[in-house]
Image 1 (cartoon, each protein chain N blue to C red):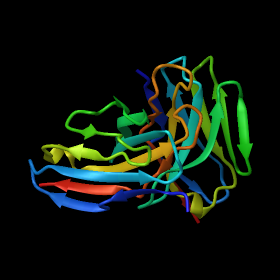
Image 2: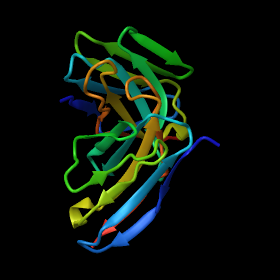
Image 3: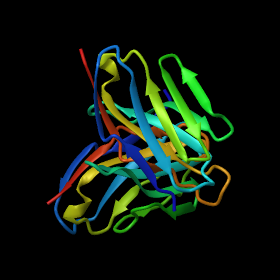
Image 4: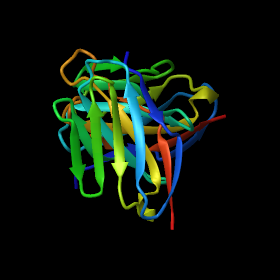
Length: 113
Length: 114
């Protein structure tokens, strides 16, 4: 089954404790992206990757890191989480960014205390 | 960078009525405009998209129109049903440029009352 998976789905952590949210897709998509969703702000792009070892900042990259060492995986790293990073996070993938459907993962609800 | 404005933020209609959601964008180079539907507690899913060489596209009860001159595009849902209740997001991107970002509007919460 073609899908995008994320783990964990729910996470409660404390300020400053490094964490990683994993994202994996099995559709051989080149483009992957991370978004955060906050009430009233819609979906805002954090980082995106056009292919292996190619990543770039989205609109809200501060406080986040990503890596793309394999085509299927695109982990999101929070080196020192802060309460303002409490949010719902979605990973997405597509063949390309321009004219293709973005397939979203199920989401990760993160709470930073 | 691109800025996408979406209106209204909430929309309530009676079952069977039509619903219209409007978006404007700022980057004249944008040429791809998808619409995503997000049901409560679920992930966004593409429902329809339009490219800049097309003025209108329909898929059953859903249609999207694009006015490149005015830089706005709209989602039209006819004969609304309760299962159409969801948050709808518009988005814009430039598929041929150096900016590979997909910029979303802030969303419209559509409620269809039985």
